[in-house]
Length: 374
Image (tube, helix red, strand yellow):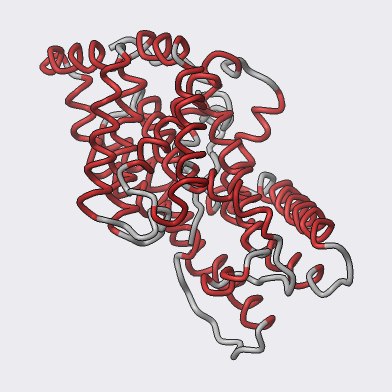
């Protein structure tokens, strides 16, 4: 197969998804139910956030799984199976283990301190569950993907290209996502972390994300052509879900809406974001450490700012600023220390190109990188 082209739009979508992750997690601190999933919550809720949170929450994690599958396509371009597993182990498995024992316990201690609980060390995957899922998908699907790239599978590959280059082919993706929802009956649908629903939905999204890139220009031209249709469909389904069904929305409608939002983002991203920039190069490298560290600075910001006697909206802005500045300041230190680069999944060998120079689509497939709902 020809060498994979570079896709800046995929990297931009990953960066945007991480930014939305950070904002969404901050918003949880202003909901009364946040404490039930181990967040520090403000005494005054901000209920107006619920509608945008509801809109985001059904596609933000699936989008990351789709993008991660796309990233693996590029990662496989110059590596055999053994090389791929070694590289993914260093870029995903090592930061996951490190974060589980050294990063997540810190924000759990801050949470315990805030709620006057025993200050005991507890290791946990926390928000890093996403990385464990991605690594499992790589192990399970990489052999299949290598087979699809081989000459022996040219007929199957051509069929995938033909199907996914036509809008009716998207019904296959929608049907798979609906079937997963109906069979597992997740309540709520957005409970992805450490659930079989999150694992199986992520597996489907990872697989189809790879197939989208495999399908090549035909797929991208098709979704660009129908981008307004996807937006209108997603908006209509969201309105029906929110204002007609409410909490009684049928589960089969949610994955369809989720896919419509994701296809909208992929379509507009491929049309308008597929170009390099210095901002993208920097943010692409920063995304992984920010994802790993953001809960520490979020909890510290909540601890310091929530007791202030100021408007709830101002608290939100201040926590957002505190978290963002803390994460990027930490990244500036991490990127300069070889050992820290290794532990946070960044490239460290001089012989390797800069993180954002081999398609960031390849390099960042590990958040590939990231979560969201705990």
